[in-house]
Image (cartoon, rainbow, N blue to C red; front, side, top):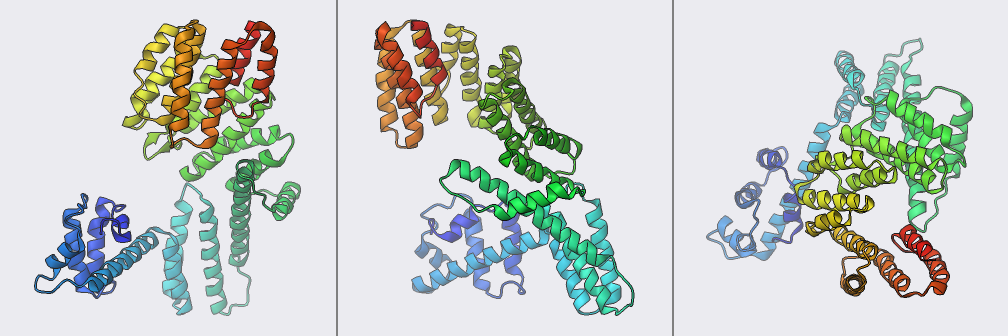
Length: 470
């Protein structure tokens, strides 16, 4: 049973959900099978360990039906019914948490032509929606549903006058569709850069041109995704980026956390693309750092309450690129404790090692590299690459060649590394070996090889040491 769909689902339950699901099963409205209550009670008693021995189907069956001979078919039915009940419970929980539940109740009241009930419920929902500070895309949809139902209620009364709810419904449906469509299109453009796929965005381009040329005022979230789309398709989107920054600053409290994660990621990626193209590189690196810091300080770039190790590392790299060494060291010391406990020590020592390496304090850098315990595969690999560079700078050629050999074997044998990632570091070790062994007149050929190699880490460092050897 430990490998069953039911157990995999129950393992995701929070503490409060175990209690609520027990109440769900005890309700005759949702469940009329009393054997499910006893079955779930047994599982709940051994959670969260779920030992294989206690969850053996025959053991469980004996506990539930002590006087019966084991029946595998009955046991499978019991598991299947409980799984379906758990899925129904999750759906009910989701419905309870959604504002749309109130819309469904209002629609039913309107369909039953209960005017007084409808009016009271409409005012309740409207008051709640007006108080919502963070406006998600679904907020537009809720407004559309509410206005659509209000318009239906108006039609039921057969009054000979106009009603504004028809226009409100239409406008909010447009906002929901436009915003959702542009948001999806931004993600499609992103995926096109990563995967070998092409999306037809001709309709979105028409919508973009319409919004661009209409001159009409649009809602903040729609305007934000409009500017993001522009940064992905326009040749010169510098003005769009500035407008995007202005919008997210002005409407910071209205933008939901889940949307901020997407929005800031697009802004960060735009800055990185501009810096890579050497378009006002220092300016965009600074802008990128500012966006990261806003996300970290407001904690919407956190995952499950912790700062992501990748976001932490990216901020440190940006600080290094700007040569803000003192500021970066302070950031490392202040924020490594915001990482999940299992990443803290490695993040601290790896990034301090990188800091001291860049300051050419190789002894201190090696000291911190020795304290990296490789809890994360990529910290371990980057640490070895950094140690290779230290050996080269210290002219410790024997240690360098020995590490090149052992590191190459490690990269080839490790099955957890993707092919591209493996090639990036194997090419680095191969090219570094060629640099070390090359005579002066062969250096130009090595430089050519470095430039022609598509996947290689530390390319600029390799080119730098080649220039020094020339």
